[in-house]
Amino acid sequence: GAVVSQHPSRVICKSGTSVKIECRSLDFQATTMFWYRQFPKKSLMLMATSNEGSKATYEQGVEKDKFLINHASLTLSTLTVTSAHPEDSSFYICSARDRAVPSTDTQYFGPGTRLTVL
Amino acid sequence: SQKIEQNSEALNIQEGKTATLTCNYTNYSPAYLQWYRQDPGRGPVFLLLIRENEKEKRKERLKVTFDTTLKQSLFHITASQPADSATYLCAPKSPGANNLFFGTGTRLTVIP
Image: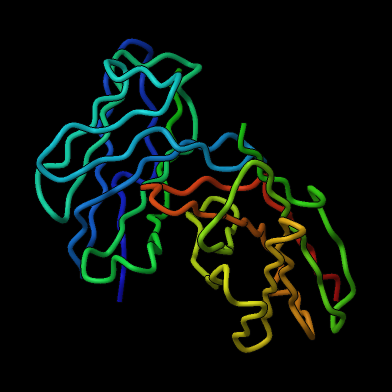
């Protein structure tokens, strides 16, 4: 149980284009999902918290117009990197919290999406 | 500001030995602390959660301790195996906070 998927797993795009990454909770409902970014050999950096049916909460220094987050249902959140540039190349990971088990606050992570912007 | 530090970036040990990883935090009063495992190119996988009123937690070959006075958690893997090679991340969680912040991670390599 508690499986989170991400699509695509890898994407290569040209500079200036937009890329959408999907995060799905497959066997549970998630009122809250989180988006992280990870650079090589570095820890996860929280970008934003996505709440179903409301606007995402962005961490300091993360441009909300650059990284658009939509959490339209209890099982799907999307991250769109708009007008991507080479410095946006990174490993993007989402996680989801099971609404049925709020007390533990355990997050279930997706397998990540490797974005390369040429 | 809040800070989470894991003792070393990399740790190499011989198969069969016990690996001990350290997580130190400052300017935090976590209600609990979680440990995750991350393999290269993959998302983290939850391993263990220990609450502030618990001194120790065990799960198979894993053991976690939590010392709120020292502001430290230790993560032990006994009888280590090459398959335990991965990066291990700690994540203390403050009460009332909605999200997790992760430590820098320790890359463990178990040598056969």
